[in-house]
Each structure stands twice: as structure tokens, then as C-alpha cells.
Length: 104
Image 1: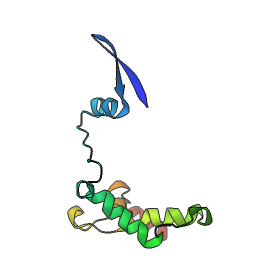
Image 2 (image 1 turned 45 degrees about the vertical axis):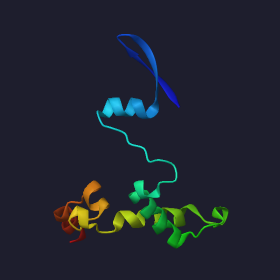
Image 3 (image 1 turned 60 degrees about the vertical axis):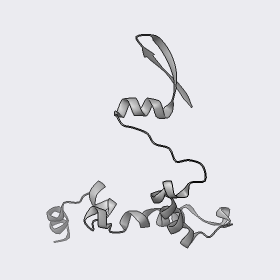
Image 4 (image 1 turned 90 degrees about the horizontal axis):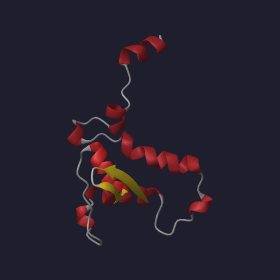
């Protein structure tokens, strides 16, 4: 998908990743084809998913609830790099006082 951005020199055709790079003021990096070691997190996530859905799985026989359950599992795993918190803990924090009040 391409987008057009107006610049002082006129409109320039750029790809979506270039647009996002500019808006977010961040660099984009791409792995080389067939260099799986350059995609560590991606390969690890694929390995985790394959524990539940082996290669050649017929996804037409799997419901969306099962897929969502497997999708959520990596986000509930504590990570050493996150000081043994889960991604869900960091992205969706809960106020423990509010939880305690609502239970009591």
C-alpha cells in the first residue's frame, strides 16, 4: 500500500513503512529473506503457536475462541527482560486496590 505525502519539493510517493517511520520518528528494520536468526521474537512466537497448531493444521476446523486463547498465552508469560512481569501486566495494568475493593 502506498501513500502520498506533501513535501516542500512536492508530493512524494512513499510506502506505508516510510510514512510510519516519519510519523513515529523511529527507524524501521527488515530481516533478510531466509535469515530466521534475524527474527528471534517472531521465530519464538511461531514455535509457541506450533505447540498448539502443528504444521498442516486445518484452520477451518478451529474456532476463533481457540485461536484467541493461543494468541493470549504469550502475553501472559512472565519475561526476564520485563523483570518477570507479563506484557499484559505492563500494557494493561490493573489497580490492585480497585480490584480488592470490588471483590470485598
